[in-house]
Length: 310
Image (cartoon, rainbow, N blue to C red; front, side):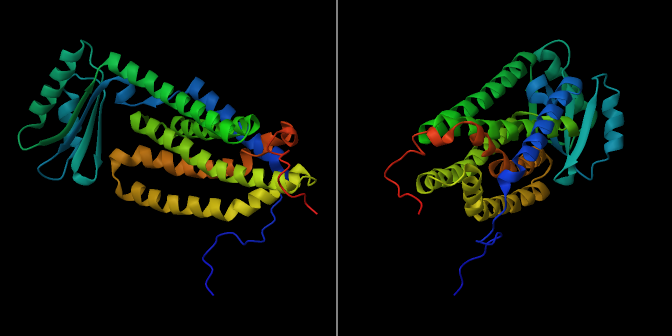
C-alpha cells in the first residue's frame, strides 16, 4: 500500500542536541559577521530608502545599453544605472537623488525622455524624495520589529515564556542572516526586501511552532526522559514535515527566481536564502535555548493530565 513520499525515514535518530553548541557557535558567527558587514560596508539601499528616480522602459527594438549609457551619461545627472530584465527590450533606469527637491527629480525624468527620443514606452516611473524615503526606511524597520514582537507574544501565550524567547531568537537569526546576505552581495535593499523579511519571519515561526508543539506533547508524555533525548525525539519526529515543507517552497521560489525577472530578483533571492536559514534555525537553533531555561518547571511540563512514561 502506498504511504506517501518522505524525504526523511520515520525511524531517523539524529542526535541534534549533541551538536547544539557547534550550531549555536555557527549562528553566532553569522550574526557577528552581519554586524561587521553593516558597520564597515552597510546596505545598498534602493531608491525606496535613499530617494531617486526609477524608470522602467520598453525600447522599440533590442536595447543597446552602451549607446543608452553614453546618451544618458552626458545629461549631468550623476550616476545612472541601466539593467535589462524580462526581455532584451526592457530596461530599468536608476538615477541617484537629484539636488533641488521634487522639481529637480521631475526635470531629470524629462531629460531622460528627451535623450531616449520617441518610440519608447514608459511602463513605470517612480520618483522618491528624501523625506518619503526616510519615512519608508523607518517604517520598514518598525514593521519588522513589530512583527517579531507579535510573534514572541503569540508563542508566549500559546506555550510558555521560554518558548517565546526561543522562537524570537530563531527569528532574529533568520532576519539578521538575510540582511547580512544583502550586505555581502551588495544587492538593493528596498521595500520588497522588507516584505521578504516579514515573510521569512512568518515562515520560520510556523516551522518552529510545529517543533514546539511536539516538544510540549513529549514533555507531558515522557516526564522522566532527559531533555536532550526528548528534544532529539521531537525534532526527529517532525523532521520529515519540516524538510518537505522547505522543499516544496524552494521549488516555487526557484521558478520565481528564474522566471520572475529583475523586478522580483531581490525578493526571490531573499526568500530562497530565508527558507534555507529558516529551516536550519527551526531544526538546529530554536530548541537549544530551552535547555538553559528550566523548561521542566514550566506548566507545560507539569501537566498532570498526561500519562507517565512507563
